[in-house]
Image 1 (cartoon, helix red, strand yellow):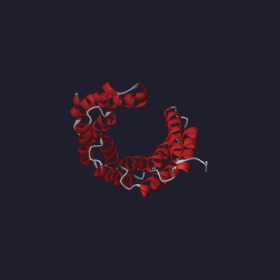
Image 2 (cartoon, one colour):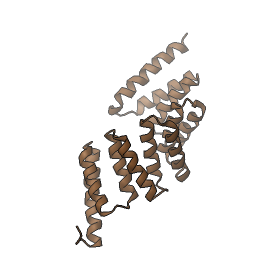
Image 3 (cartoon, one colour):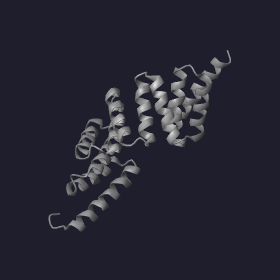
Image 4 (cartoon, one colour):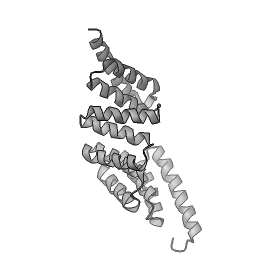
Amino acid sequence: MDHLNDNEIVEKVKSYLIAANKHLKMDEIRAAVYYYDRALELDPDNSRIWDNRGVALSKAKKFDEALESFEIALDLDPENSKAWTNMGVCLASLKRFEEALNSFEHAIELDSEDDEAWNNQGSALFSLKRYEEALISFDEALRLNPYNIMAWAGKGSTLRFLDNKEEAVECLEKFISLASPELAPQVEEAWSMIFNLKLQLNK
């Protein structure tokens, strides 16, 4: 490795990242992390690689290790908005919702057009039972991207708690219409919510 020139290092890093991303897509997490680590041996100051490594570890539910990767990514590049978002998702998985919210706020400050950051902020606010604020975040996510599936689900759930049953049903039905097969458990939950909401509306 010591004998590689700059161009060879760039090409080697690129090949490792292609392999890592391929394995990540296939949920082969150990292999993905292996190739991210190989890339980082050659390019240790690359914030995006540390961020991607964190995403892989999060998928494996190795949240503490993932947080370490996100922290390194952000030490290297505090303006990496994706790393702020991904760290927030990881913190939310650990039920550290206030910290997650702080991460999403950083992400939105850096990229206010990122519908996923707005959606995730809405989810954190929902978990903190700050429903009015959550609704604002979900609405912004949907303004930016009307096809953000999880924002429709989040908005529907939030409206249910705000006692806006009719609009909650509309949002949940929109979520179901857009949902892909891998979201079957969430779709089933949405149908259950709709059933209960319609029962209440028909009383």
